[in-house]
Length: 323
Image (cartoon, rainbow, N blue to C red; front, side, top):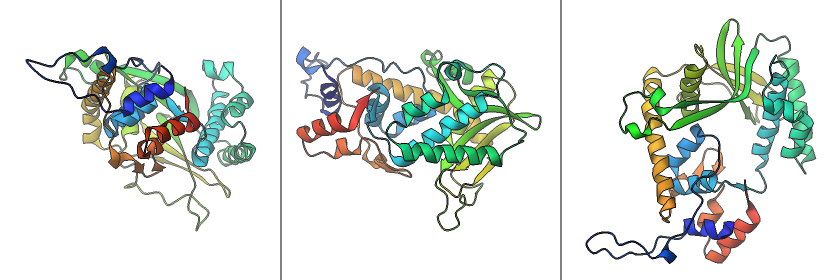
């Protein structure tokens, strides 16, 4: 079965099945054999949230690993800026991670930015401006782009459904770093900024990071694995000229942080239910209220909005890659 046929199986409603003294086993032709695992090595905050927001999007992104052939410009710019910052801090480590030793910065940029010379040039410019702005800074990296894992049982001992205790969740954080004697988790956020002022938008403590699922997950896992962590810092980078940079430690809402381990257990339960549904040959639910969000439309909105199977086939073959 090719990838288009597999995806169509996810989009096709399950056949009507007759019920007599119980659920009759469907005919072999009614079942579609899908891969039982995406092969992904992580189960991070975005993946868990996706399972709750839209099961069909989860199936596309994390089960079949379908990604757009062409990244939106803002996403590519963010990726390239993150790559520059990762190498900038990794080269300061006494014992760099394997990824730093196996691929040079130029190789990573060529891979991510192939065919986009303007985006590559702009990313190099923002990286140089960043280094100038933070020259002599007190931040000292301990780990860069490393993945940390913890089991549900470690994070939420004595929770319901003990069969979930051995399931793990993970986070891959931009930096764990020492700043003025304390250790912090640092996350780079690239932004377009305010076109009226040419600066980053005014920071608000009651803004988008007032309560943030990624922040809660990263903190609870890294504290379990690393030890005392003071908190979480948002490292903002304006990705277009004139460049601007700032950093903000986040106030962590205590009750939400205390509940996060139980929420993670519930999210994992939802993810496993979707995988079970796929394995049974059923279609995961599409949640159309999730088609548009703060950063625009879902990557798969054209597939769901198609008027025919033929149109879906064309979209899948021309707009997406596996891997």
